[in-house]
Length: 251
Image (tube, rainbow, N blue to C red; front, side, top):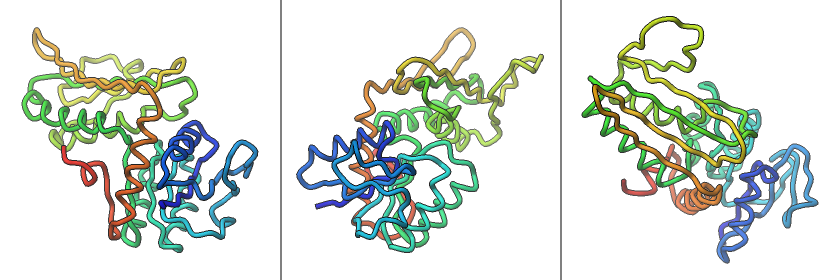
């Protein structure tokens, strides 16, 4: 049995993870973490902080808020509990906390838990290798109107992947205050927020007289929950270190 401590258990993704875990006989949510500590809608105990939890979980899955990351990682390291970090919108200092924790415990860290999105990342890198010198690159992402961070962590993940191939590039998020022609070394990143859009990402390579578009559309939050549970099962058997989707699957 895989016993999970679920951080952000009452959020949208937390509820999806809990519902999906309940369908697996070999997986259970042992307890949840939520600042309000409200367990009225959960079938497991909910605590305001990980420090209030006295049990022993096999793994932590985090779909919470960046502000909760430091305390959660401190708990994970002190209790030697592997952690799957799915929270997006982290700043560089918080990413560094994740990296430092991975020196002590196994940590799975990905801006997107979808297999399709991670394949999109590989395809975007390949396209950048072939087209990058002569094609303009733009990334457009769309999410529901409740998402607070923009651009999405996935959009930045795609941009970073392209930047690995084209290290002279730089990111441009807003052209409304700039009156000049597009720089060939730009990677433009645009965000759309509206309705109940689960998640859409498109990487555009625009050249002379032709345009290549690589895109991914998420139809349900369940695919991200499934990815997190698969990552948890994978991470349980790993040594301390930083892992991502490339370590769990072969692309």
